[in-house]
Length: 354
Image (cartoon, rainbow, N blue to C red; front, side):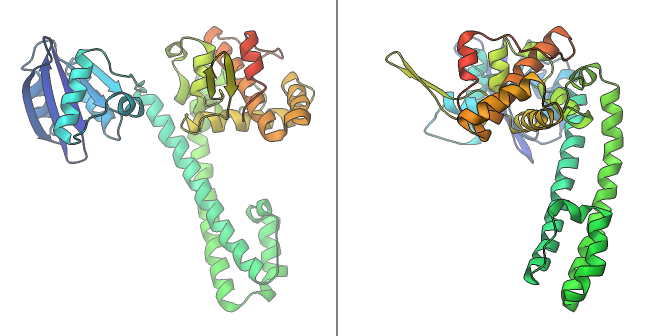
């Protein structure tokens, strides 16, 4: 039995192979990146070999190549790995050896490798997010020109036909020639970006309609095709979470806890959690509360808002929604207007932190 650690880089792969007995180094090699033939030939010499790679931009193609050759693949969680494995020396050779030895000792903190379909969905969704942000930046440059002349327009109006008409009629006479040139250029960019974003909405909607789990999540008021597909791409399979508390923690909605001497302190939610999932659930919560004010989540939000403020109340309500999402995906049950089942300590945590 052998274990291989791969320290992956854009131009090369540094590989170390250790044996099962004692973790002794039996082979090391540096291979050019994407030289898949050399990679498989080198690893195939060792019967029963398993390979571990740290999370990085290059792991998907390595996984595809290794699994195609029948070699077991493991993905190591980079942040947790750094917390476990400190070494006074830091170089590619040391990293590859450390990965191999930790795999042999079964000390690798695992990261879940998403499927190829999930990665495709995430590329599509994040591309759309990037374009929306670019459009916002362009719109902000137009607002900057307006502010220099003492003019103002609500931000959302600039993306509408009425707002652009106001620019041409009311604002145009007050702008300098160079400012008109800037505004004209930026309006063309906004129109192009808006058209491209609409073009991306079609495949997102198609993918959402073909996926049963997305349709399940869309039974929640406030979850549309975009948020539903985002959650499915980021979270499935739900079986990788042993319980609801682990799921909510992964979503970045569980407050930090510090216990000592019988006293427990609840802090803020961690910033290093999955920001895409947290953004999706918090945004869906805000829409849900707005569209369904008579619902239980909205009523809970209103009670908490009066007591702890809207920011903490929004996170606490999103945490309740996360528990419900876990139950829905676990049992394949559509949304119902009912409180998720919590333990008493989980109910207390749902009311603290931000």
